[in-house]
Image 1 (cartoon, one colour):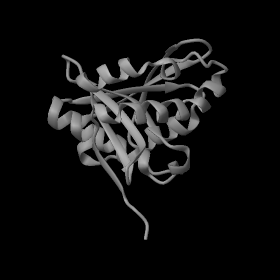
Image 2 (cartoon, rainbow, N blue to C red):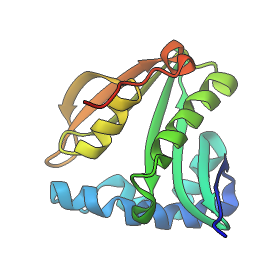
Image 3 (cartoon, rainbow, N blue to C red):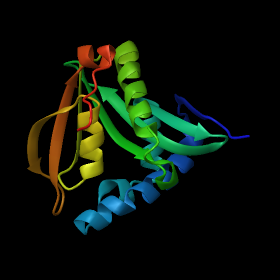
Length: 170
């Protein structure tokens, strides 16, 4: 009998599992841009633990194992900033990333009063861009990032998130 994946708020006790998963998941991004000094690969456990105290952090668990995570904050203008959406490579392409993204949007609306969302990814990260477009995000800007990456900023209104607006794949 298989186990189901559950999505819950993360606590400091998950910090080490999240950091290890983050390191695993960002290897492909680092390889894509030829830069292994990106922040997700150099973040310390202390830094992540501090982030868990101030940000909304969700994890997806398969049994006791953290297999996905996402972080978010809401700024003074009501923009929910979503970041570090990670899914274990063996769990990708099963809808878990979209499920976590929707859960974070709900959490930032309910708990933080977000009325819009913003996130970013690298310009070569086609899988990420496809996921975000599928979930109603539109491109706002492309700006130079760290190293060789250009960062694509995408946005979505909370109204679209609450309506469950998705773009059908062609």
